[in-house]
Image 1: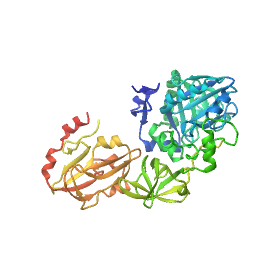
Image 2: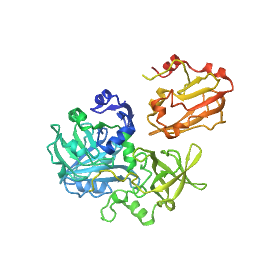
Image 3: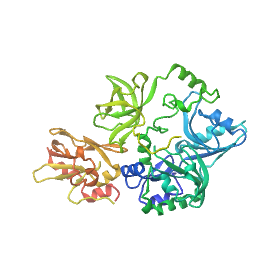
Image 4: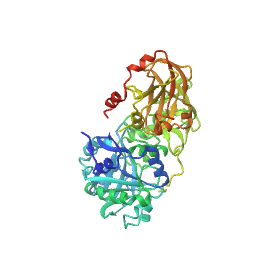
Length: 367
Length: 128
């Protein structure tokens, strides 16, 4: 039985197309993916991301616990956040996530909805013997996001918190529409923006406040369809498409969140250290279709007669007007500019390895 | 509630077919289908002279999130294809029964049209 977020009735009343996603009935689109995508690129969009999972990690052992569990370093300052992968001993990825350090001894892990149960089992099984208390807060927590170049202008109407005091990948506690929230400058769109973590019971108050003002702010609700095209245009990976238990962060060009040099021990370290030393056989690359056609998850890639890789995500990029994608290719073919071919419905279409991000002029702030 | 014109015939795979005065059959996808797919960003058209087989793919539509083949409702020869869609694929969304038509087929057996659904049959098929 698919579950509803606290904002389900709002999406329904807005006439959204609602489909099951990761066990939740989620809005896929309202007015249309293209229009919603461009609204986020040019102005701002409002997202319900309450399906995401939230785990609290508290206690004197929180830092050491996360350093053991995650590939990135947990010793960021309180008030900052970091992106990380969480790996199996064989280097395959359990999930990718954002971790907010709320205080010296408190962290909030935000995981993919599709991995919620698996992640909770994994995280809890490793907490034994560590001096931490972990709590699954997914049901009590809603997530509402405002993303786009005008995000700060719009968000400032609903909070007294000085948003300029929150840099990229940082957060503060504050009130949004009169409800207590964690206000974070994070997102998945390549644009500036904020994510508000609130109690489930407060989600409609926040959503309604923003929507009631939408005639003036021109913000539009944005569904998961445009969320996917937005993230892909800036080359962010999606778990289940581009990364999973069969791929390692090094293959997925996420080596920057694997802190081998720090000397900390974490699950998967041994395999990843060896992979770093020996190099990976394949690598995630950006792909741009040079002919007519759209590459999709599962599209085969060829160099001459040899199959050399596969597309893991692909779409027509709304802000660019070309078909782009991510995929894995043999390491020797991963260099920018390498010509390849994609097999689309039985025909070979030329594609080229290109730099990620595809869309480079987003309003996202620098850390 | 999608639009289902009374004067057209329909397939289970959501194409519409219209018998023209010259004996050819114009083919497109239905309002229901374009709505399901979302914004069409690319259209793959059949070549003129292509031998179309009933139920076989004539070409494909690429939406932002999905791709889908469309199928010939009759056996015959492709006489024309809507090349305007190459530069303006969105016509399939905005005017699926008019400027968003896909192809014209000269049927080898026009009676095949009789086996297609009429508007009320198609309305039942789509649950509307």
